[in-house]
Length: 335
DNA sequence: AAGGGTCCCAACCGCTTCGGC
DNA sequence: AGCCGAAGCGGTTGGGACCCT
Image 1: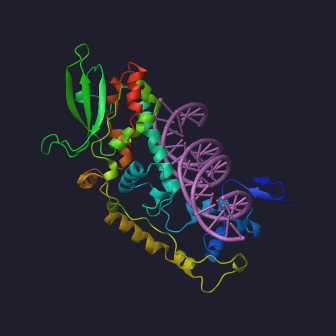
Image 2: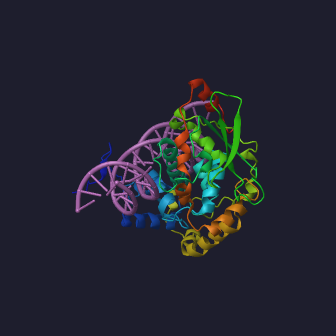
Image 3: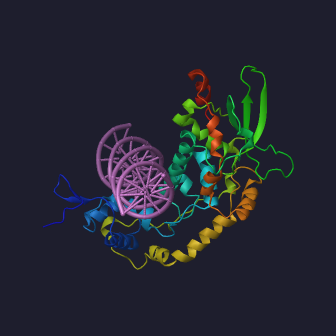
């Protein structure tokens, strides 16, 4: 009797397995790719090799079994920068973005972005309790403020050497009742919060209740030269597709075997390439600044959220009216 | 120690695009 | 030109690991 655990019976009486892959299945799939290359996925099932759909096989290969993958390895600071920059340029074109990140899949990029988005969303959404950690760390905001408009801006240095970060949040404080009195203060924008990221937050429901107004940067992210980014990587040699009946291994079809055999060498090459072709992420000198800061701060970029003075959000108040909010939501950063 | 919350990631689903006929 | 299957892509979900209280 056939094992039906995890198997889904099809109308034609056959079974399709879903769920986690076993090591044995991986091995079968690897053997298939070694022989025939990463194509003809549907034939894996029709040949009776695996009870998986072609789709499932392809996904498994692309996301887990493909050579040179950096699986189980967190995104580096530079990779994060690349993703942030490319997302601003391409939008949610994860597959396209992934081609600029050797060893990363579209799934990796997608997961990274959604995790990061959730994190930011939570920071903006949840009223931060007065944390002991940040108490007294944000003097600019360390007092009641009637209303804040936070707008991303660039390239305004606050005095020579006073700040290592060119990106800052411009906080406009309107004094209630006076209306025409406005005070501008520059709040250092943590390196990993880019104006583009702030614009992303426009979609967040929290902003219905927060008078944050976003203004597009005068320097469009579309100006970022792509030549500064790592070039898209092709993982495979391009081989002619054999006819279906000729799927048997051929002595001449060494391309994929080579690919498996030389994984390690090419991996280090890719990593080196990524390092040497470090993107500037749109702002001249910013990569250098970031590098400098990275040297001084060995923590991962994730730690920025720990450092971010989250009580900046303590003073955000609901929008006066939906009309005001409309002016914000109508702004499209990609225009 | 237990329970809840969060994060991360693998895998699936549905839609779109592509290519052959 | 239209159809159909394969492949690609982006969104979503489920579950395990981890952390915190």
